Length: 375
Image (cartoon, rainbow, N blue to C red; front, side, top):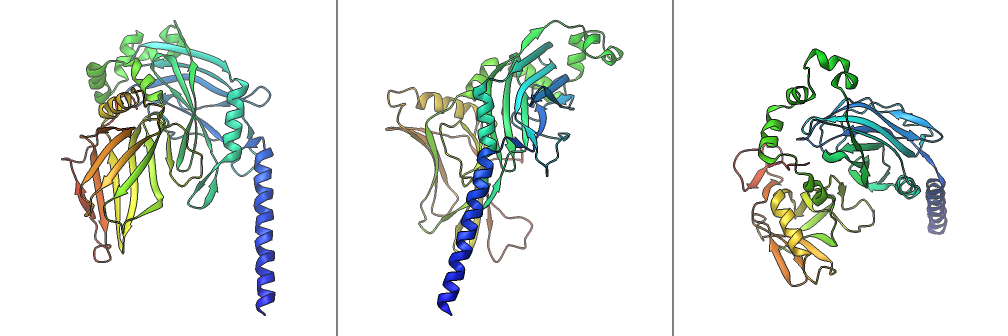
């Protein structure tokens, strides 16, 4: 009986392996995938889009229907789908046509860009590889165009629990255009581009513009990548990290979970970390929000030394009682500490799991988390 059971298990295992191999082979040769297209811009630097088309296949175009964009870099909201998400899908994006008005700059930008073969190959490769999400294979579903001040264009592939920046080198041209040619209805509101743009900014955007202007060099900082890992170290040896709930959000808009199976290369600066860890039957959930200027300065200093080729470590040390945190970047023998991080920790035990409030530790007043200027 045991012999027959063993043979059956081996046969079933072999069958699963064959199916998995076939699926992997199918993905590696596939050239069409279901995807939608969308457009966004930094929260403080909104834009209005006259038209935006993502080219694919042999001269086909995917129209992006969004007119107003400021969800944030790398963030897709409210896309309209023309793709059959259960069908064969579409060929890979290979071109971008877009014309937009930057409210904070009072400028029009236009681009008609054919993607390089290298970029097209990278996009296809990411679709073919996909990633893991809680032991389930996922794929990207959104091609996201991010429009930045100065006419910079960043391209992302977004999916459930993963945002990947695939290109940050595209550049649009500033052009002259009459307001009525951009939108004839705009003349019913204002007669000049300047007045029209001012009228479309909310109070927070106006205040930010007055304080920070348009810091073009900031997005160049956001682009930078460094040779480092992100680690947590616990004073209590009984702590166990929940690898399915270790999320990383980076300053360049990228987002991923540590368990997604994607090979880690150089990383942008960290913006926020989210982690669950367990001690016996108690579960802690930590949210770590890093100060923008501190993170910018830390990595610039840390990787300016002659040891910059050494792989660094961004470390979060957790005290024995899970209520004290040391956060620093170590590159070689140098350590650079963060002092202004905002931290929330929630604690769930068998005794309090039915309670509404599990807040255990926080180090700042109010509920507002500091927002990044250019995100």
